[in-house]
Image (cartoon, rainbow, N blue to C red; front, side, top):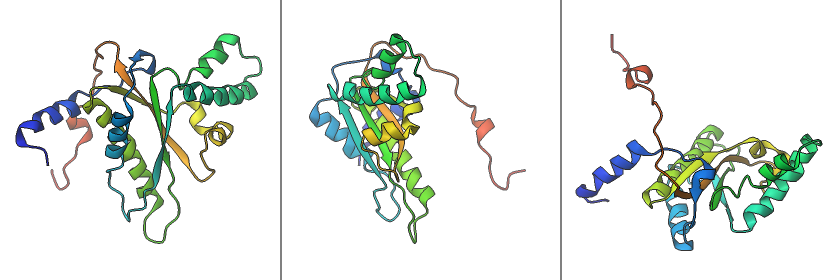
Length: 196
């Protein structure tokens, strides 16, 4: 457990986190040890039945562009008249940030644990990864984008037919401070059961 004096820093982190566009994330990427810490934290989420209904795919270095080639191949099928600029943009999808981690849901039918709970656990893993990224002094952006749902891309990335991409978490260092955006007012999103 964290000492009491460390808690305000955690609260500050949770109340100030803001997604940074992948193109505004710069290197260096997390070290191997830092990445291990991030993934360890992302793995410590509620998991009814201890099913581990999620896994991670790491895209770093040249592998980001290799994955980009799979994205380009699928894009060309959909857009045969694409311009060279459009094709290059697709090639760079996973190379915009120094590091990308795909969070993959492997939710499946179970005699006791609803699939919905398993999917939520995978979402919690992605959320924990994002917050851990900020806790280590980096920044992140959780995106899906079209290729997260394209079977050809998923096959090329090693995502099995029974799995789904929860999101691609782009990780790096913020090039500039992020401006916050309006957040929902609590009175608009909170009700109290039994209140008049």
